[in-house]
Length: 197
Image 1: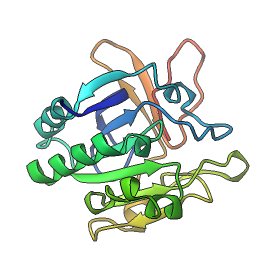
Image 2: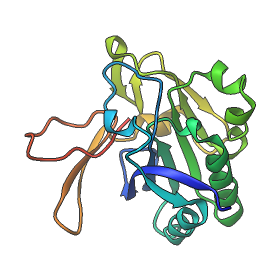
Image 3: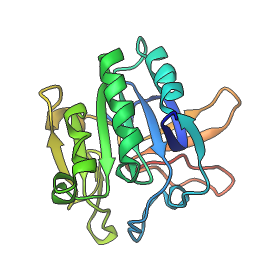
Image 4: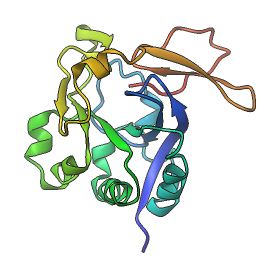
């Protein structure tokens, strides 16, 4: 049976979710329940679009001439560790796209769990730790000051993350306006916000 990922949203071209132009995949489902989370719509496991890993690979590899890498956020990506591992492994085999992964688990919770830590060899940058509203930072891709950065390859360094814009406005071909990034601006309620971190 084909591996499937529960996906909340997909953005094919973003400048505010990691270094360079990146595709962003927001996975659906999170049980961590961080107070003040910007993406509460990503928490429930029943609100997702289910995609096979192969469908997602085809879509991402098809973008490889226009993007530098893929950012995976959520929800909590590491609550779907097996299909996520399959996706990252296949991306590594089929492309040279960099991988940036956001997780609410801290470094020890990831390293101490075999299923979660299995994805690390395929990740260039990991941002780890639960969001803490009282320690809000919203800069350098870190939502709060407790979140830790782990450069797992030599592809990027701290300056690369510091140069990423904190927010962006994305306008779809259908005219929809979406906000993205670590510090999306506040808009009138008539506009819909796209997931950030």
